[in-house]
Image 1: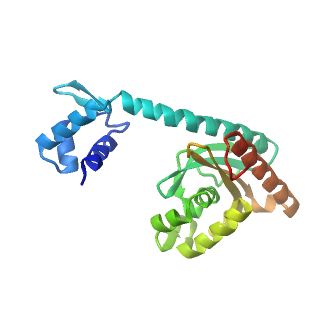
Image 2: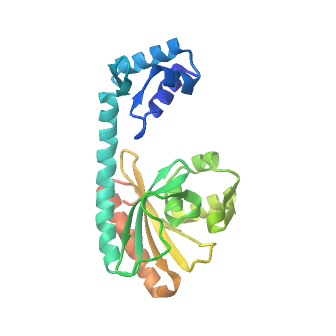
Image 3: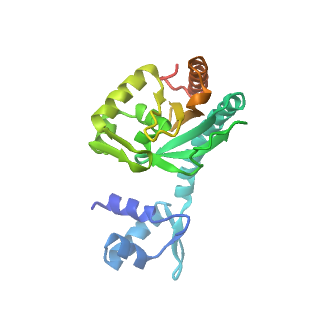
Length: 250
């Protein structure tokens, strides 16, 4: 393990429930001698990534961590704010539920759920994480990801028992190619819940990406209404994508 890897692993030990690091804890977690763990934390302190707060207290996140977090947060927040504003306008006028999601590893993380006056009861709550390949919004995010990376980080056979989902990675990649060409994805609900969803994704110039989805009851939407919802979804994505200089939409 390189020094860089050790430093990154040490920083990843920080969380909402662990705001301080002690030499003894880092030594155990990284399987290092206490002297090596101490040197590592001092190096991170020297770079502003940690701050030593006392002999018996250990280290906490330093100003560089906050600066980097603020950079990411403000850029992503602007993207979410713009997408959320467009999504709310669409949802208010139609019997659908809207979602915004980001990628967390191979999962889609639901960061915002927007309900209409006729909410869908099979909804994923904000904060839910679902395998990206099993959802329309997750597939939209995968659609905007380099296929070589998708092949690399997904297993050959994809399964998600709660939704009775099973598909080969190759078949998914073929589906994503088709979706990329038309610029939207569909749920294909294998759990027979009577719901459907369509989705797409936008990316800012700095690489932040969010998926935007509309979920609805199959029996409530005719073919004509589906085409209208699809047009609204694509317009939403185009408007947001244009604002953030997303070449996929311009």
